[in-house]
Length: 603
Image 1: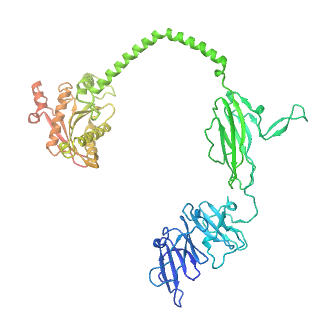
Image 2: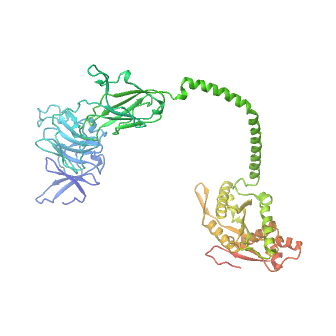
Image 3: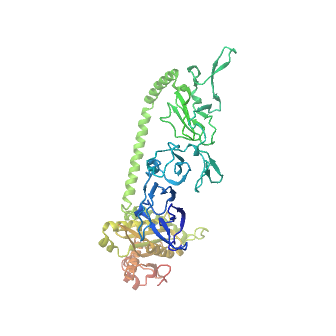
């Protein structure tokens, strides 16, 4: 057709011969035939301005002279305006409450409307299918009668439990409704049936946690026909039939049912154990309920059923009593009093022992607090790393032990297989490049955040036995204990790359990349003379290497190592560790510049 380019989902013809096309996403399209050829048509676009709730959902149905529209927001209708030339159309849709306000106020989604051929309709909604009929079917509407004023009644009981697919319904002219689905179903809404018929809820069995049956579904008392036999059955439980259960049987299983057999699986039950449950349970299809650890007391288990038509049964009740446990009997209370007196004597007898234990506890607490204070004095408060004091008070012990180890290896005539003697302490002194710019630009709080994240990188890069120390400001010392010399350069490259690749979060949405400069040495500085250069002097040599890195381009690591020439005096050593110019001029040291793995190392 000329002018029809939309994806059409449904077509409806009105009394004037116009077509109303339900499009996929563009609302309705009214098609008016004009001319001799069937594809010569004119169209009007019907959209939100004409009263449609949206442009995607809805289905049109011709109903008498009106055009009905079923939508997720209820039923709307329009009196079809005569066709007029131009782009505008006078047809307007409004909410239609002729079948009941619940079908037009948006509380129910309406997906289909079918004429039942006797003045009523079938409505397919989100709450099921309803047969909507005139209150007086004898008086069928005339041509001049206002249908919107005709009262309707609705009933969905006949359709309860019937499964309907998304396809439409089919109302047979001779009565009945066909419902297509996996199984073709026919429903007779006008069939004579009592949907309000009463039925009963029944407690069929009560068992204990030991699977012992204490109630099998009916009450009875002794009659006169058979001696010593309960032959008179009852519907209610009397006081003499209330069982007293020992506390050990305080877990019970209640099984229940109801003699209603239409549409299996649609029955719902609600239960409450009075004295234990504060309220009724939710409606559920389960036919058994288990209770465990029921305290002593008197209880009444109540259950009621509801069928698919909403008919609810009276309550079925089973009463019972749980006796208290032996330790809450009168003679048990006398025993408790005797035990209490014995305990008082024990308390007095052991009071002195308690004082002694309290004294020991206080001594341990003092020792623990002392250790905590010591830990705090050795820890940097900002980063949580070790501080400079840790070097002299704790790490120095490891250093002395390592010197003794190296001396032993040198002096031993035959080394053990595991004692290679190659292990060293690697000392890395790190400094953040251009850190002052961070404080000047973003503030000291941002600088603190950067230092914390930098500290975390160092902590994650070392082993548990290694040491990371914040010397002050943006300077950090990393000590790798007993490390293979072949690894120390790789570790420097690893730190450079990790720092350069990290995006540091300075808060307030600011994220930057930073680099660092590293100076590092090995301890002992002279392998043949482990104690010649002290640990502190080794740190000074690493510091000189770090400053060399910062003054020669930054973002690099500089390794300072000893040459074959050994200082002849302590004075020469002091000059060597305090002046790079002196150390290099005297050929005591050599340096090696190390950059990231993708850069070539330079000596």
